[in-house]
Image (cartoon, rainbow, N blue to C red; front, side, top):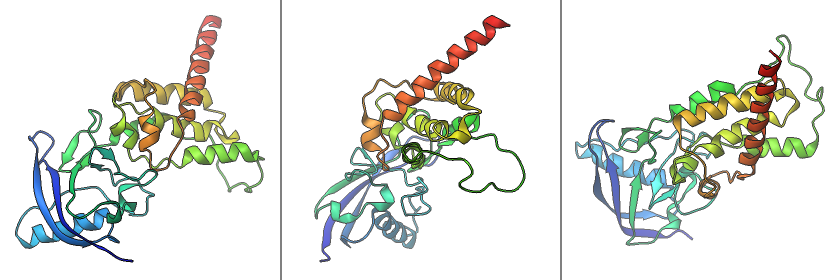
Length: 258
């Protein structure tokens, strides 16, 4: 059954540029169906702002299917809003009630500088992936899909880690602004598979140290797992740390032989 929410108050962060000072701007939504998505509500507000000759609210979005990870919003202090395992674009207004006040902010992390309004620069994630998020593969025709046997538990665990959509909720939720869950997911999904073994330890070392140059340190609060829209387990952080320690040990042994 469709319900209509009435008299919503939106407090939206507005900031004209990276170096400008920002502030909350208050808007009213008189009524909206509870079947509307959260982003559709912002679309409706933006259409109204444009009709009034005002600047539309800038926010990231693309697929609107919980795949691309661009819909990065803090909603009432929670990354992606009140529903666990859900990206902002998958959040529907049925999670709110008539008369609610909804505070909408961008990710708050020093490694994610604000570009404008609700849009942040997450290119620090790109630097981490560039450091080791690849495998060595011979050129030529594609091999048969079943050429390299992969045990089912290994493929399942790798797929669980590969679900990371790089939204940055883990960083925004972490009190330290750490990116360990993101980095660990990107490392683990390759390091578990046979195809990822050639760079396994160099990958762990390079990606972790690139991460450390941009983000804060992990102290196991667990907020990252709670905020992750794909519910990736912090177990991947333990796997990443184990491979990083092995990588540093291997490097010391190699240097001692030189």
